[in-house]
Length: 419
Image (cartoon, rainbow, N blue to C red; front, side, top):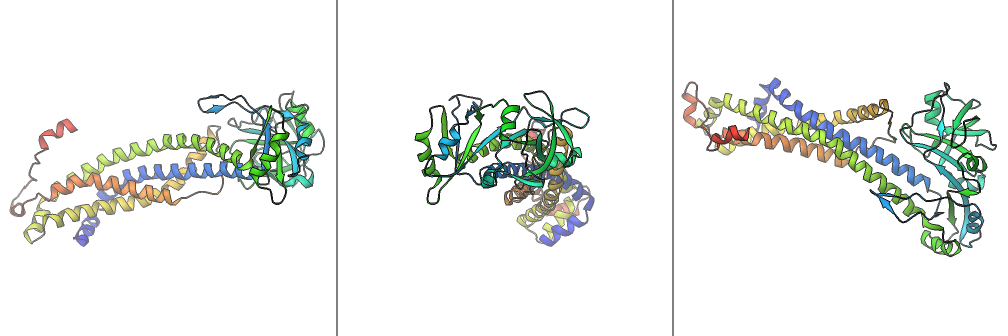
């Protein structure tokens, strides 16, 4: 009966293809959503992991203990004198100052307009002492790090999009009036291909303090432990030396907290996109149901002939179910492949809307394959199940009748109401 079912599909190629199109589109939307969101989430996790790669503990200001709709109050700056306090703790091997601003730094295009960042622009103030390089999450791609107040380093993606080159003069707007800087270097954030539409501008610590309104202040101090001291031990050693307005946490907990925040946003984004795939599959289920119902009605004499030569109702049921499973499997595999292209298309669409997403190496998880195949084949099987059951009711005598029709189900009178 399996061979019979496959031959039946080959004799109705066009109908099988049209039946599978709905499943291909639905599965493509689902697999594309998973590929896109998993890739973006991996990019953010890489960002946070590499930001704290050489750090064991982070000292920052103690923010207000309040939250609104899941958003906690930002940490205030700390006095720069805490850098020496941290360095004075015996368990600390190295400590470095850091300044970061996610809102007020705007790199300007050659025509003087601000680069659209989709709300993601980073301004860094870092100490570029070679001894403290382990705290720097950026990798220098070309040129050198800034050493003077009129020097800056930008990210490679921004330099590529705007045509910036080392030695150019560019303008940057911050909390202070726009200023001209010499571009002395181009850097990349860890191993990320791109921060999406986001930009990065890197200054030395004194320049960042002036531009970002942090005179005499730092946003955080990164600390590395001596040999034999773990993260928790380092936090316990630093905590007593800090004033009440400062707090210390392990680098792992800081990275996890940031990752959790992104994961919550990506979950909402994922469900939003999955809704379109579910709608497509829901519509596709009706298409499959109608197609199989028509096919079964047209093959009444065929099924009756099978019953006449000895096929059981179970064998007829198996034949129709095999047809639906084959269509579901092939359509799901095609949808899975199309989903990868769709993920790139969705990312490009967000880019045209000014909200390009950060990217890393494409993530094609086993979960994506399992869900796509299970949903595609499951929907096809369920949609084809009732027509398959109806096919088993074909009596053998129908094979010799001209214009024979399927017997009406006992639920037939409810069909208009269900429709």
